Image 1: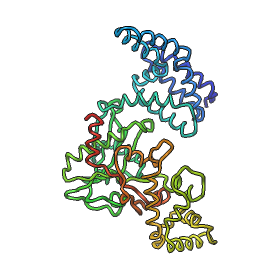
Image 2 (image 1 turned 135 degrees about the horizontal axis):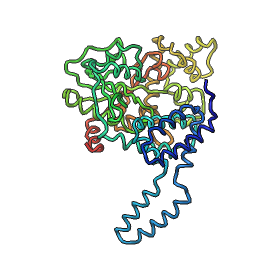
Image 3 (image 1 turned 90 degrees about the horizontal axis):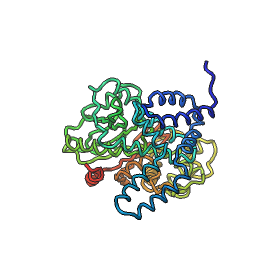
Image 4 (image 1 turned 60 degrees about the vertical axis):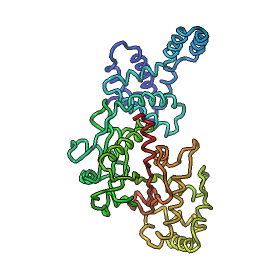
Amino acid sequence: MPKRRNPAAVIESLVRMAGKIVDSTEAPEELLEEARVLYDQLPVEAEAELFRRLLDTMEVPAAEIGPVLDEAREALASDTPIRAEALATLRKRLTSRLHLLLEKMADSPGGLRLLIGLRSDILSAQRRGASGLEPFESEIADLLTAWFRHGFLSLEEITPRSPYQLIRYLKDRELVHPMVSLEEMGLRLGADRRCFGLFHCAMPDVPVVFIEVALTGGIPRSIDEIIGPAAKLPEEHPDTAVFYSINNTQNGLAGLGLGKVLVYRVTEILRRDNPDVKTYVTLSPIPGLWPRYLRPILEGRATNFGLTRTQIEEEFPAKSRELIVARAAARLGRTPASLADALLALLSSSEWFGDPALVRALRKPLTEIAYIHVAKERDARGRPLNPVANFHLSNGAIIPRRMVHFGANTTRRGLEDSCSLMASYVYSQRWFQALRRNLGL
């Protein structure tokens, strides 16, 4: 068994190899492959240090920036031809070696996948608390955004006649509504169930993002109506298109707007093929509603949320409070100190949904709380707090109060993560026209 190398030594070797790749006058495929093998030996917890070292050693030295800017200022005071030449020189001299490294990676066979994986690792390091990596992540994101423009992307529909490997790939990467068998994937590819993927010309074998759509009569209020035992028979003339699952297959492409492009292109095809369809909505999960939002409030933790523990308790009328406290007392073997404590005791388990009286008492308050979460709560940057809400609302969709559905996902996962609630974000005809203009299509 080979001896495990010291992480510091691996980092130093990778930094030296990065410099060789930039300075190489020939195709650096062998160097890149050697670097990839070496990078795979680096422990996850040491990745952030490598990223910082690359930033420190491959950024434009601070001492060089001042003179370059002084030369540019002097040239800009001259006539037009010199001014244009000065700006071109300025851009060239302020291009970092890190940017040149990333460009060489992207231009090499398989290099685009390496870049995507590298950004995924940087994003993971940031989620673990690593700081100072924003310039590195931004540099890669800008390059990937250029590589994933419309001209490089193609939309394909996945059908029962698509290659087996592709259908299996989608089944394994369906994270919104996971599947156990390929037969389940087959049920999502019927005449009234459509699936589309966005493919990149440098990665033609797998989609970078895919979406599943149901054509229905009216807006479904439960995922069971689409993929569960309550699924309805195909409509002869469906009037609604429901986007019920969208999955990014490459973590390193998160946040680059590919989902928006996919939604637009799929909407364009559905409008063409189904002229009776006038309503375009989602049936979306509300991830983290219980563990990351409602539970911390009920526990009395310090949060930046607009909703408070007192406001939650005020959502429940007197009779509902009595029932909830009584049910919680039976469960705990003691009387809970407050309604919030009673709610904590009951909602911490998925068993509450088996009690019809309790379900009736919780329905309206939980629906209102979920609406506040997706429609009103904002993060420190003013964006919708819930990530799915942020995606759709920033795309131009709206979320009316009546489009928050209680009992929409009663699987164990749906109960434990979002207390059975889902949301329908509505995409209007005006949105479609505006997005068409914004995308230049």
